[in-house]
Length: 509
Image 1 (cartoon, helix red, strand yellow):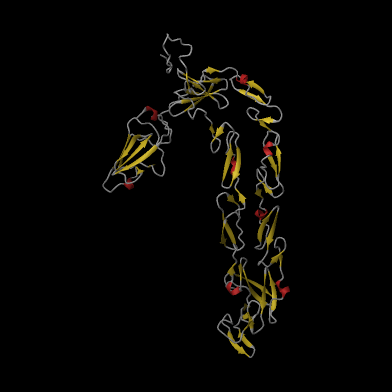
Image 2 (cartoon, one colour):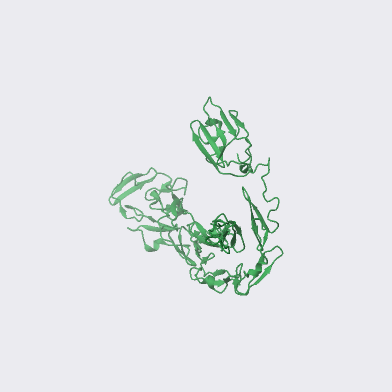
């Protein structure tokens, strides 16, 4: 293997499947061979055939790291797996130290040395350039990098700083503070944009909104203000409680409605108001929630608790056993006892005796209380999925939203992901960084390297300068900003009579 891969650092790795063996390579060099493994899980004895032994050989002299993961699992040792030259541990391994290419300070204290896998890179101070920052370009302030009448000051290591006049900001005082940052109207929902002293902007939100750009509608329903099963509907700096089908009224559904005022009980039935509902005590010969059903004669379901039914000229009569009373013998003389009311119904005692009322979250006749569909009014916002849970509901939010009703857009900019002065713009389930001129990348994490595109032609060498600039060190025979021009070696050459000078590369004839 080449020495460049023996540096105790991470390298590219790949797996090649062949019949009865697996070859794993690092840095495009073969380093591992397993001759009896049935899949990409290495060193796992349970993957071997009953009579097989596994053999793992790591290339001699290789010191590096192979990342364990879904496709490469280097697991525990096994008596049935023979291992040679394998060291288990976390990378970098402590048994050796990686080569420090900056150890000898090649940048001559005129810049910052950055170690690369196969080399080093000097990030020179403003005054210096060259591969090792060996070229003194003179005072950086002579090139007048500071704009808008700013004052340039060089420090003791060759960098410079621009002292901006009032109204300008930026490394070179190139950005004007005056309201330009507000020209694109970054503040939403009728908020006010103001310029901060450092040249950025700040949004003053109206009531009911929050966020860097006042883009978040504050959910006043988060405090759960609606009582007794009322549904909260969020509004701007306000909320409304929908008390429909709850039996309550008021701003917060806090007042019990006396349903008996509407006289719901028919056929001379007696109405009893309950919390959130009502109950009708029907006269002999009528039944139903509102005594709306006329009973013509006895049948098997009229009389409860073992009572016998007796036909009457105008209806029927239930002959109750001892301990029970009521039109249908439904009232237990001992009061509310477990099992007196059907499932999903609560027992209440009043002047008429025992009343069975559907529990909160249920509706219908007490004998057949059905759950109220809490998702009926689509309480989940922003594409959230509603599911009934007990006497309430749960919202499953789409990525990018949170809250009990998925009402809040997750502020991905809260963690300040944009580096090096980049401006973070919040998106749904993501963010976008507007980077400064010197940086790029999803989080502005990469400094722009003008030499990356190899602008120097004809084997010229690219060197970094200040302000994202570069210069080309041209080979003999070429000149120009990018070494694009062949030097005319015939210039000022006087050939003998009847001879013509022919230019070459760094030569003539």
